[in-house]
Image 1 (cartoon, rainbow, N blue to C red):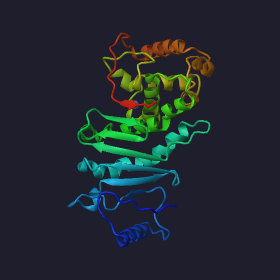
Image 2: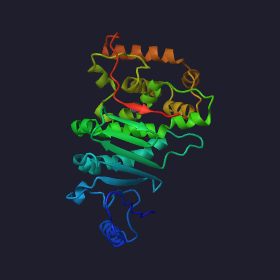
Image 3: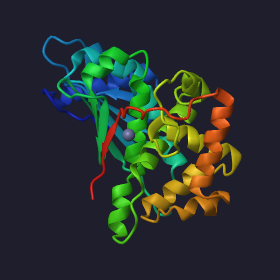
Image 4: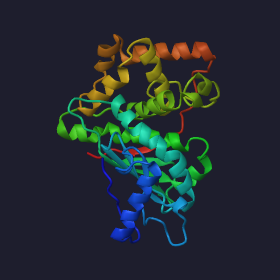
Length: 296
Ligand SMILES: [Zn+2]
């Protein structure tokens, strides 16, 4: 159990820090201190005039104290309440879950992650290493819709750590971007929020400008991965992830895991989806909502 109090942005005396811990422990009715998995606002992180409710820097402790995720809304103060009330519990629950979904031999997921909201950033969100950046402008418009799920998508990139694997295996093969993004959207749409129907047949039915290819990326690839998982290999994503992370991705893996080539699977999936939805196969490409910077 850890009861450290981080102090950033502002000052806090040792006595005040002690008072905070005592008050927090009392609130939890736990004499030993804060619960390991709770979301903890960081004292001293409020700008002058802010109330404690709009504290803009908080640290989430998850996975029995193993993981620390900070959420910084100091550049977008109006998002602080949403970050505390909605996003923080989701991050606390799902970061360890994603780690469990994407294991690898000898792999240790990053123990520290930061989620930083930016008032000037364009687009939606991106990930570089263990740092997730979120565009405040887009999030404001999507708080009750896709906002939280987009952070889950980015958390998958933090856990993937494919650049790190390739550095350990310099001759290794890099996985295609469509698959990297497809895995992130598979976990997001089919495991985190299936009730949103963001990549399943309900979603496909409503799209007019879409290319139905397994390598289209994002939601379309997520749909493909889900289809192959259900039909041929329930451990597909787990196995692909482990291979990619070690720099061992190869198209032959599809045959190895499922008994069918990627192209065969893609054709079968497409025919199945088209039959179900009566879609026109010649549709334009999807827009790409996310960018991930993979170093190395
Ligand atoms: Zn992405």
